[in-house]
Amino acid sequence: MLALPPVSIVIPTRDRPELLRQTVQSVLDGDSLPAEIVVVDQSSGPRAALPAGESVEIRRLELSSRGLSRARNAGVAAATHDVIVMIDDDVRVQPDWLRRLVDALLAAPAGTVVTGTVAAPPTTTDGFVPSTTSRTEPETFFGRQPGDFLFGGNMAMRRAVFEQVGPFDERLGAGALFASAEDNDWGYRLLEAGCEIARVAVPDKRAGEALKEVVRRSILPIVVVLRPVRPAISFWVIPARLRRSAIVLFFSGTTIS
Image (cartoon, rainbow, N blue to C red; front, side, top):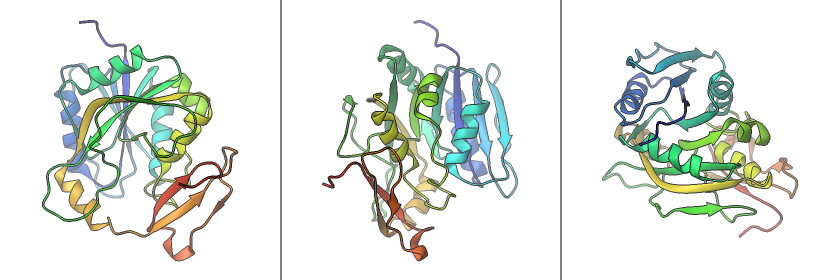
């Protein structure tokens, strides 16, 4: 088995110390390990005591500002290595997760971002859980697409692709003015730049504790954001009273289906 190249894992977090600790531990329990884990911590309360990794450098970058997109951008800037993997602070990864995800990236053409699946844990609670998927079949997406196929909580890329596409839009994502769809927007710009998204059957799983919070918020209003053909936001159809509590849906181009 060939050794993995040096990998940087970026984990944004805010006020979830125990979930973060479990996420980092699941990475350290893996069959293959990253060279470093960059935790971008925007917590307002006590910081989590992170597990120690004998051969893994674990660095905490503390930010006073809020926003998932801002944290991801800061994490990429602070990462040391060319291969960058992103996960959320409420997932549990399988032992072979990192190797399979990075192997798929190395086997893909230059300009590809590899995304795995994000599975919800078993629950008896009724409700739709966003940011998860049960689809596991390998697929490749390029050009204009009728849906969103990139999962920011489970993806790998080369630094050159991130620099080509540009940073996450800091107006979008948890903690920002529009609290969703930052990975949808970045995936749109990725495809517009001529790159590809490769989905592989490499799952991680949301923690049950986090799911309770997600399900409570799963009846949020739906807000439609229209994008023109140009890769720039044209206008926002969002009433002011919904701006901090809405699921934002992006529609690309001039046709909505």
